[in-house]
Image 1 (cartoon, rainbow, N blue to C red):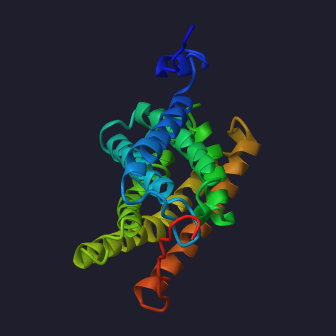
Image 2 (spheres, rainbow, N blue to C red):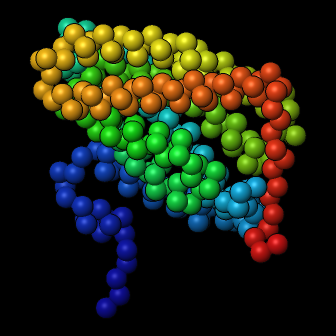
Length: 269
């Protein structure tokens, strides 16, 4: 007897009441594999590698999936903040927003998928990236409880807006489109730098300050002090990362550092 491996059979290995973050992880993993293996492998990217030796088909497929994921998270953050605040204004720690709940699940699955792809993409196999993905995944997992839905709408939603031009910038680099469209590439770079500084260097510290105020004022009444401490430590670490990345972006924008030339060699050469 012959058997075919269909999507229904694959999903059958998972319980029907699985949380949304599991579906998010599965969908991103399958979509990334299909795009890299069955679409981009038939383009000029096949056989090429990045400067650090990552397969270009995997690298570019990752960028497309990240573009889709972060755009969706950004949409959820803005939509929740503007139209679906639920009860978050009445209670910043335990107020509930259905959109924030969904955002927490999607971000958890997205960060677990990021950790998986770090095994294949050498550019992102660093302590800073791994620490960012692990911390964000752990914190996002607690949001659907519900917990800190008010603050989640900004930190893992609205703040993701800066990743849209970042993904476009990485895609243009990977496809070698920057020399072909230099003005468009410049617009994308400066849009990324501007959005990053506005959201993650200027607004992020204020949002963090407000989160710390809410946390410390309710510290004695929190459901789990270790969880809250984890959020405070995580927020501190992620905030330091924003400043570090902002420093690097600023140096690049001021011309104090120059990007290394990207070489795309055929595998085996």
